[in-house]
Every structure is written in C-alpha cells, then in structure tokens.
Length: 290
Image (cartoon, rainbow, N blue to C red; front, side):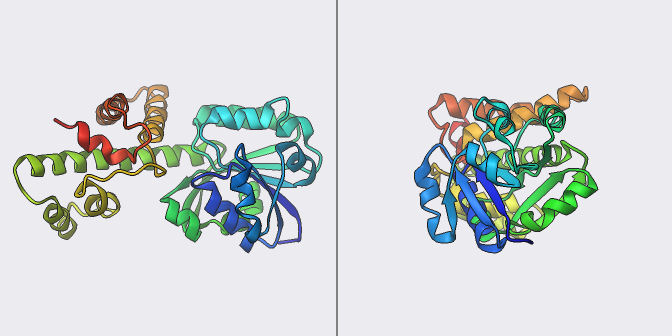
C-alpha cells in the first residue's frame, strides 16, 4: 500500500480496535473522528490523528465507517457537514456498520451519482476480535472495488469474504447475527430449565460443549455468562441485538418469507428491554424467561 491518507469515523466499542489495527498495519496516515473525541485521542499512540468528517472528506482517499445504524451512516455520508458535500480527495467509503441492505444499496446509488463509491463491509465476532484484528468481514462490492479495499480490510480481519454486489455483505452479516442470537435464545432457555430443575448450570455448559449441541455461541456465552447470570454492559447489547433481528425480519418481509423463530427471539429481547436490560449483553434475555 502506498503512503496515503485514509479516514476512520466511529471509534466506539468495535471501532477502537479496528481503527488501531488499520493505523498500525496499513502504513497509511489515519485520520480519526468520533462524537466523543476522547476516543480518538486515546489512539494517538497508535498513530491515529484526530480529525473531523469534513477534513477527512477533503484529505483522505478512502474512509471507513463504524456507526450504530444506517441512519447515522446516511447522515455522515449525505448530511450538510457530511462526506459527499466536502469530498475532494475522497473516492471510496467503506461502511463497516451493520445496516439495512436495501437502504445500503440506495445510498450506494446516490453516492455514485456524486462521484463516490460505497462498499458495505460489516463485521462479525467480538470486541476482542476487533482488538486482535481477527474479525469476519463480509463485503458487498464489485470485484474491482473488492480488490481495492481488501488489503485494508485484511488489517482488521482474518477472514474477508466477497459476498457479491452492493448490499450482499449486509445480508450475510444480518443472517449471521440472526442465527447467533436465535441460538443464544435456545441456550438461555436451556439454562433456565436447568436452574428450575435444580441442576448445575456450569455442568450443563460443560455437558453441552462435549456433545452435538456444542457451538461458538455456547463457548462464547454459556459458561462465562449464562451459567453465572452475569451480563455486563459495553458488550453487544440487547438493544443492538434487537436492531439486527429487526433487520432480518425486514429482509424476510421483502422476500415474502416467514420467520417465526426470529419473531419469538425478538419478542424476548423486547421483554428484556422493558425489564431495564437494554444496555446489557443480550444473553440477559435469560432473566426474562419464566
């Protein structure tokens, strides 16, 4: 990669590790921006330079976004102070948020008319994976676009998969999270049953891990969280999990497909939020199973 200037907008729970890895591995000057500039300044030791959306649009050739929803992505791209209105050197926007697939495609078309290309590249796996640079990144792009962005994505992920044209990366990510959260719902039911039956939840976690019910979801959440009834904040929250399931349900509606399993899990997440657990790690749905 050449010694160029690139940008990163959205330095939060996942974006912090992603931006750090990009700055340390890409060989580029990385300009960082976030609503909380202390998050950006905390990465100065990694070589990240505090900046603004406007300055990034003017100086960077490529910018990476890690934002909560498509609403924020659209605002950063098309708002009065957004990237499109101030683009000079900027050519490519890589959205690493989890966003609505149809709105992603529509945004890509709008930006294309303004001389900018949008690549969707949402990430999967944990905050630790973001810190370690071992994320799964599913990419929606043309083959030419994928070739241009892959070396940068390799700085943040150990598995970078070209899924198809615009929006495809979002579809794959939405389906990944749908399967994961539904699996955790089943695990939460199992741990609630074990507790009601007076059995050891720690032993249940071990038993499941030794049998055909073993899974990444079990190893991530079982012994460490469900068995201990501990669900911290500043992890993948109930509110974010519900957002992703609603994206999955919206996708199903657009395809005229039913999805009863996901509807039930979404209802359990809604009940968790009503019980005051919106910011807790989403397996907290265990606490509202009766």
